[in-house]
Image (cartoon, rainbow, N blue to C red; front, side):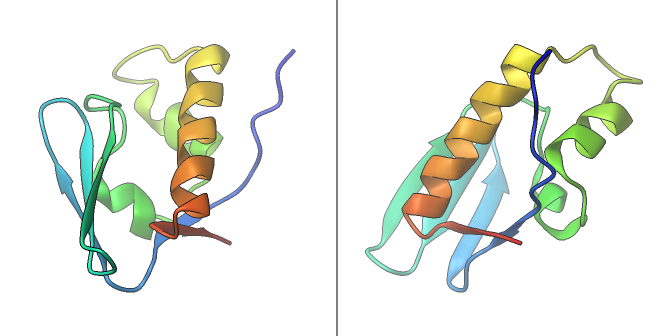
Length: 91
């Protein structure tokens, strides 16, 4: 059994996010830099204002599509990389 954390995420100050066909495009004022999160339609910009942890979001989305724990772990790892780059914040 895998363990997906209950972390929640917010955009950092000066970061904007936009939905694209491949997933999410993040633009930061520091740099400026672009970051891509290839999640298709699984995550959308409202995730970062939803107060949902990734597992909660997946449970809401499960009505539309089945999401594996492995997929969630990959997304969580990518979100961690965005935290390291200062694009998003964990709370």
